[in-house]
Length: 94
Image (cartoon, rainbow, N blue to C red; front, side, top):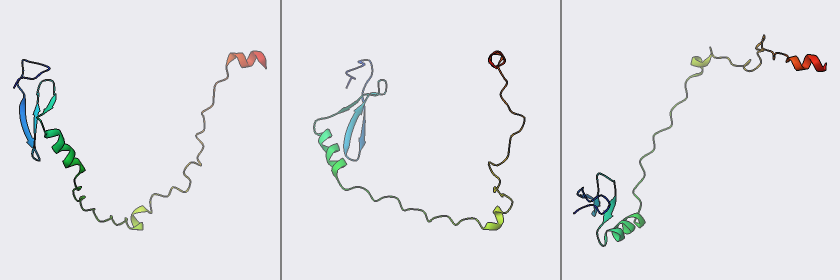
């Protein structure tokens, strides 16, 4: 079957969960046969699959690995030497 959008390419058929899908590899268009949309709606409304099992929570690192990283003075340091240069207009108006 030829693609309705780009007639020079042929539609490829694929089947997923009992639904036959025709698609164009060139324009990436998707076409369904009669009744296939109803099958898709029934599959989407059906029971959900079981979720993947959750992983066990990871154990925190022992405190001995964190002793060198004391951040109690974080944000208190002054970054000296940085000041804004006065503009020449401020000299005129002062």
